Image 1 (tube, rainbow, N blue to C red):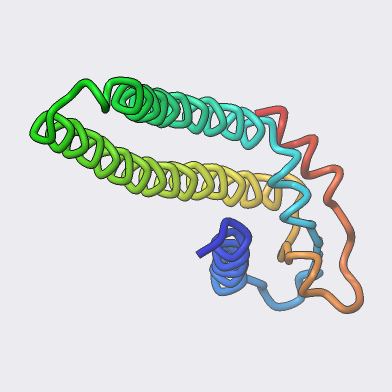
Image 2: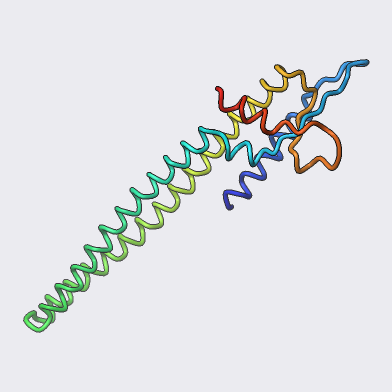
Length: 171
C-alpha cells in the first residue's frame, strides 16, 4: 500500500473516530471547523524531521547495497582478468562465489525494502497519532464541537487549517 493510501485511510479513520465521540448538548451552538489534514500533516515540523530520519535510513541502506554491488563487480572483473590463467575448477569456484554474493545482494535489497516500508508506516502512524491528539486539544481549547477533514466538507464550517498548523507546531 502506498504512503498516500495509508495516509488517506488513517486520515479518514481519525476523523470518523472524532465524529463518533463528539457530544452536543441540547441548546448548545454547534461550532464546526475544517482542516486540510494533508497540508497540516506535511507542515508539521515533526513530520519533516521524520522524513529526514527516513531519508537518512534510506541512504544508509543504499550505501550498504552499493558496497555489495561493488564487491560483486570487483569479483567479476578479477575473474575476467584471471580467467585464462585459472583451471576450470577454480573458475567454477569463483563463479559460485559471485552467484552467492548476487543472491546475498538480492536478499539484502528485499530486507532493506521491507524495513524501509515498515519504518515509513511506523513514522506516518506516529505523526498521525500526534496530529489526532493535537486536533482534540485544539478543538477543546477553541471550543469546536466538530473538526472535519476539509475534503469531506462541501459547504460550511470554518477553515482553520493555518491556525491549527500554528497550534500543532507550537507543541
